[in-house]
Length: 376
Image: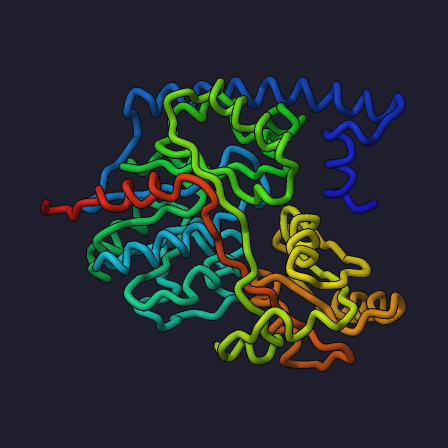
């Protein structure tokens, strides 16, 4: 069992026996130290210490757990809505897995890329797809990136990706995403669980959004609603599902060609391959879209694919009788570079995902309607 999978087996309690219990006990001690440090840090930020403001409104999109909650589709949604209102948004991201994120760097501006995915990292590069009046920047200092976007790219609103715990940049709106399939990180902070901070932090949010609500039962969803009401009774709650909007073969996707209908490949047996935080979520999405998923190969989150990885995935898929391999857009960014140098015996299809509100989209629209320019 790979390290990440074993870790989740331990913290979820699925790893039973004396060794599992011993591991959880040790991790719990570390969690208490971690929580102490986080609480002390948050207390300083609550007092306004080391918090910088920029000359533009800031919307933060983040989560309280480690792992994927669907931030990329949500950031894309917000940017489209901001562009529709006449804004020129800039997404500022840390640039996880970037070649070098020590200095702020412009990934894309007004629909034109300035660097390759190998330089920017897959998530930042993917965020830029579809932006026509916006920009994407990476850098460890979100303050520096925001100032660069305002000064040189004339951005008039900042969208901070994965920013809930990055409190050095003042934000006007704090949107927190919660994955309905694993909402509270096993109720422990890292490393005993997946919480980045204690759940009391949710009270800082301007808006809570439950994502992937179609991947849990109605009764489970109702329990989540009640618990969030208890944890953050004054914070508005909206709900979404992640819905496929089309598919594309990898080569066509890399060229930016138009997506084709989902039904184009539903007659094929599919092997799911992903390097994301919640691989089971991808499988569920494929099945809901009508795909016959006969198996999966899950790599670690943000996995850097090699030729050997591709060979292994294709070999396993063929042995299982698969007729196509399905990947996420996040994986497609990295796979496109690898497959430009080699061919596969099975078609690789990319499932494009959009976010769809099922409850209280009005709350999000009201937040965006209230965004004012720096001079307003």
